Length: 84
Image (cartoon, rainbow, N blue to C red; front, side, top):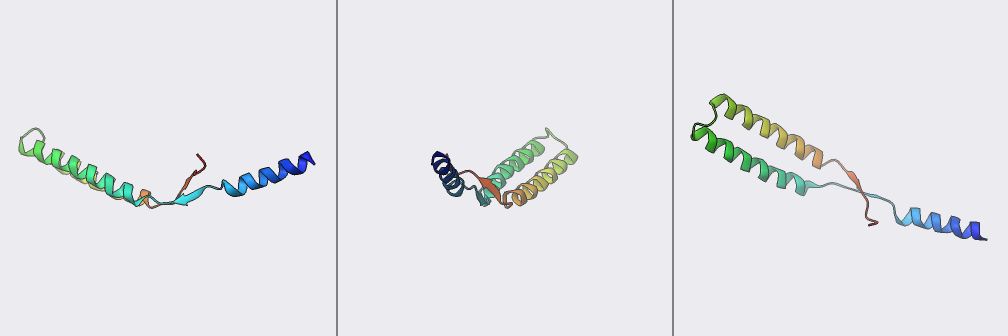
């Protein structure tokens, strides 16, 4: 009898507590805003003469690649534990 109760509780627990898969496109928008802020800082540093044209171009290109990569990763469904 106790084994049946434990088994039923276990089955109920696994059915109710299944992880959900979700995407997070909001993270893409937030990261894009952060990267635009970095781009603005790099432009200001370039205009002030603290970095060279090559450094500026390299940093902007790296930031754009990072933005694209992060947005693609934010659209991949991941498991989210909603139990806690």
